[in-house]
Image (cartoon, rainbow, N blue to C red; front, side, top):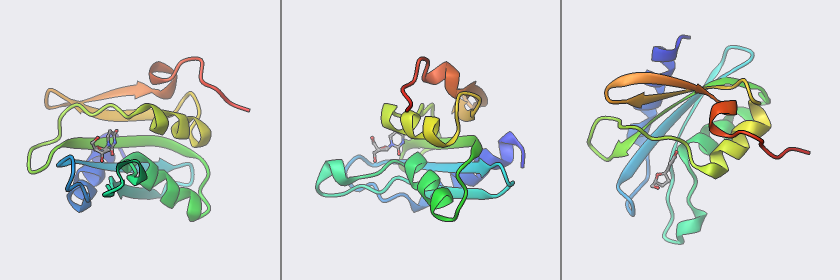
Length: 130
Ligand code: THU
């Protein structure tokens, strides 16, 4: 499973997004240490804070299947019915990535039509942990 394949999995699940309020659809795909892939989309709610981002949907699916270590995550997002644009993960999702990925987690995004890569250490320096 390479970066492009993981991004394509994120782009596919993006079509499942439930986003009637923002019309901004997001898909995420996580690769676990064991080599499995879990995908998720954003799921909004009429009570706005009850919505969940794609990244946390995917990570929650992995953890609930017994996979607590993720090594790479790809995120595809943008206005519904448009190609994916640059969609860096929100702060809450970065904190959840810290819990199950750690500083070395690779994060794959699409920017100006190309895949770009970061580590979680790039996107969440000096992160909190217990
Ligand atoms: N969203 C995600 O799913 N992931 C991100 O990285 C950024 C934002 C969702 C939340 C909400 O449903 C919509 O995008 C607009 O903020």
